[in-house]
Length: 122
Image (cartoon, rainbow, N blue to C red; front, side, top):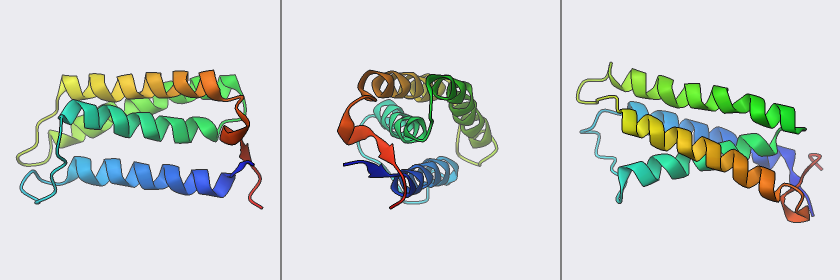
């Protein structure tokens, strides 16, 4: 059974929106995620990267999304410096980038599994 491509697109879009919204909310917004902040960053970018990687058709495309996703994490951290009460963090950039690298690596290692393949939208 293959995963419908539309489902992967929707999943990637949802993760992108959640990362973006949670990253630009002021700290007193009432939205708090329990646990280690860096683990949350890692897991969010890992999940986003696996979704994006599943949408690629070859290894060259998989590798080409690396700098895009890392730059997105850097941009989000930069934008946090413009939000009152938020501070950009180099450690967050490191956690985001680690999630991207491990996400790509994980997908490269298991991409040939039948249950992970993305098929047409039918």
